[in-house]
Length: 350
Length: 171
Image (cartoon, rainbow over all chains, first blue to last red; front, side, top):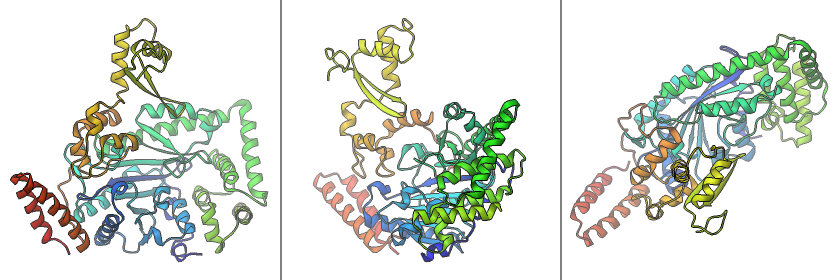
């Protein structure tokens, strides 16, 4: 097991349930896309320029003093297993993990702040907060952005704002997203309609790990699709409104699932899922996610499922393949992981 | 290029449609575009042909006029046509090199093309490594030589200033 993995805590600090609707809103993230003036974007830079950008960026990140107990990680020095671990913890993207050129990630000790260096842009700054906390995540990400902007020359034009490799990220460079658990809307088959309505509001939905990933366990990453022409606060407020609206829709969908003949059916699927998780001897991550999603919904409906929402959040993250291996302290084959996962889940639900 | 539908008339309408997450491109003549337009939910008889064609080429402006095929970024040399293929720009200067084109594109992506967020007053010049300073000096020296040969003394003076600035900068 890699030393990098050992240097991380066995739980995820930003995943504790808190704020309004902790059963529905898992976490909030705010990111800024930034680039350095005077260098080509990563897709067009030569390896030695990327080295230079990384050196400058790492020095500037250190200079801010924000990451004093942080992890400074050069991507090429990491093993596959370690990269996977970071992706699962939502600290780096798939794109950064699979980068072959000089790239790096800096992660704060609490795993709430992170900087990706030489992903699609020179810098991607993130703040992750537990629960529904747009304002808080925005303030922290902005403080990091301003500190780095004083240490490095960002590419900026008064016309287009902060310049990014892809024009979709140019302007404020902000992306505000909430990871929402919407099992009732999914069960009622309403998600296609909901997603279509969202796209009209300048909002997109993605899978649990962000861009290009699939939906697992009814978790949707909801974020702004545009980031130019309005203030950073406006983009935050728009997502805030959209999320509140989604919450209302999910609440009424849950009420529908408890009406008349549907109630028995809902209880049946939730308790079957609980039974499966309590008794299975092997459990793939997909199967775990499908069932924990139902059990989580059961808990939100006020039924006794034996877990609080913080624990739901933690297990949702910690049952992922690389986290399982980290917990086991050794490399496991898929069958070994599935057995270890089933045992851990049984332990939690006992 | 001929119309993909009738294969007789010249294609003048370039249509890019996203259907079930798949992007489909079509090159059509005005008559076929009008027929297709009805198929895509525009009411029959609601528009005459020229209106539909005008409307569509306004909506789906995804063709590249000749001048955009040869357009290049002054700084990194990226062709505008390469950008259209890959969706990524090459460097911050691409934004000034392609400003009119990007203004139009920004309007389509974001519904706006003027930044209204935080104003950035600039950061310090970075302490470049010796290798990067040397590389940049070499680039400037080559550009200076070219400017002198062309007797473009204004550019030459600007480049000389840039070189002087760089020489005092590596840390």
